[in-house]
Image 1 (spheres, rainbow, N blue to C red):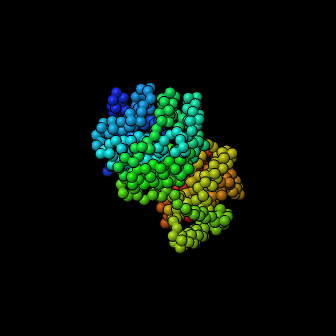
Image 2: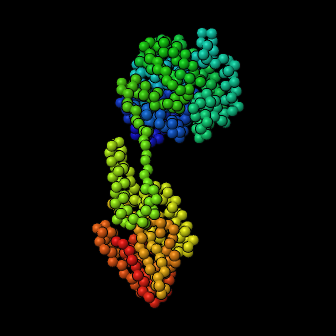
Image 3: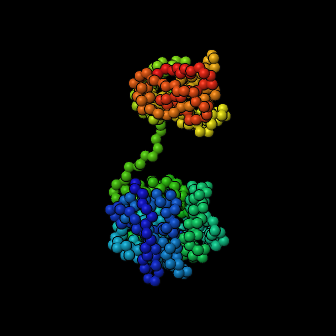
Length: 481
């Protein structure tokens, strides 16, 4: 599903009132989404769950969203608009957008507006979708599911005195009520959507809604959606609405959120898309159960030092063959880093050991200019990667220096080289060294004249070593190629 950039806001005239609306999407049909109580069509795009909801609608329809009069970016005339006046806002935005016929999707109180519009202008409605809708908003003996007068008064008082917070979020979106980021966004969303007096006026207007008498006059295909445990509107209200509209279909969904874009919106939108387009899209799989297996050779560092390169190379080959046989048997996948680590350590352990090695290097006074990559990325060619080389120093007779080239990580990590200030490595002719190692050819090392002791960059991949000793005897460099 392609992402949709935030659309530009336009305005339509509904009498003397300007109605803010947006258009987006590229589907085969036009769809007008009628929001509930209050809305803000630009701040909608700041909440990821709302964005996913709008993007899904836009994936199969050309969508029009708008702010009803008195809310969001539309004019706030300060009066108490009737349901008929608010319903006319739907006609105004359709005319301004050049849409002759469209499907109407109404949520909560927006569902009442949508039902009235479908009954009044059936020639302009392709289909009707209602979610979380009610037919009446005040209790009566023949409608026992609506709030009582006392309950509505408590609601009015909450709006008037606590509009600075996320009003009634535990009822409207209980699944997100403990999400601090969502609570902060919702509180700001309400304040941007309406002032306290405007929100109170709309709440009083909604209390007067009773659309039971017009439901039977609706003659367009209708889908009624409702979550079973909706805390703001009872499922029995949706059942009454669906039974009153000829040939309407009711779908009860799992969940307790009243806001349409909160909760399992995918299941809800699957129903909407199938109803409007005739086809249900396959659910995109975004998670799968996998088993991840890390392998390691016990005591690999010491074993590599004891066996030598050839025997260690053969052991790794047998290990890899065993692993690949198991992968082939169970249809697994081998994932390898581009650079293989000595002892087949995990990257996390390797990073920690690299940092520990650097602390030891600095502690031994080798100088801050020492090349960290020599220890954090050991590089000896083995297949597609490198393994590291360590330098070990032992005192010879007569004060001469003896240097052993060892391809193990331990000598690097533990800093066995002793006083390395007398050893200077210069990186040059690296290509020839790599080529020699790759094809197992002898490596030629040059030992230069004694040089002044100084801490300098040391790299185990150098092709040229310059060794100095404190005595007049020449140094000897030994190693295995």
